[in-house]
Length: 86
Image 1 (spheres, rainbow, N blue to C red):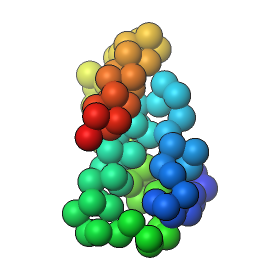
Image 2 (image 1 turned 90 degrees about the vertical axis):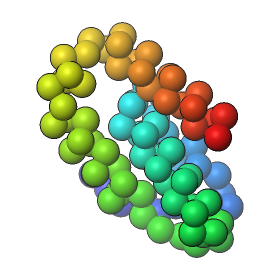
Image 3 (image 1 turned 30 degrees about the vertical axis):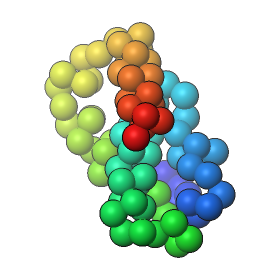
Image 4 (image 1 turned 135 degrees about the horizontal axis):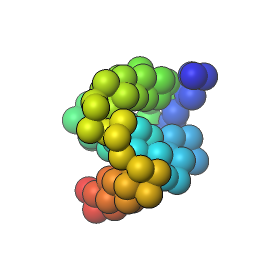
């Protein structure tokens, strides 16, 4: 996976979240919370560590691996809505 530099002032979605990707949705949520907690609104950083950690957790979950593509899509849409609401 490539390192994707991210600058919060340039927006999050173009750099992180792919439609239907639950890993990206959770990583974006974590990154947003990190930005808020650390007041890092003007810092540039890589999203790769968060993406790698979430991907490993999801792929390590037998329940997640058993989800159909439609179920994964539904999960990622719910996660993206939670991200937007926050």
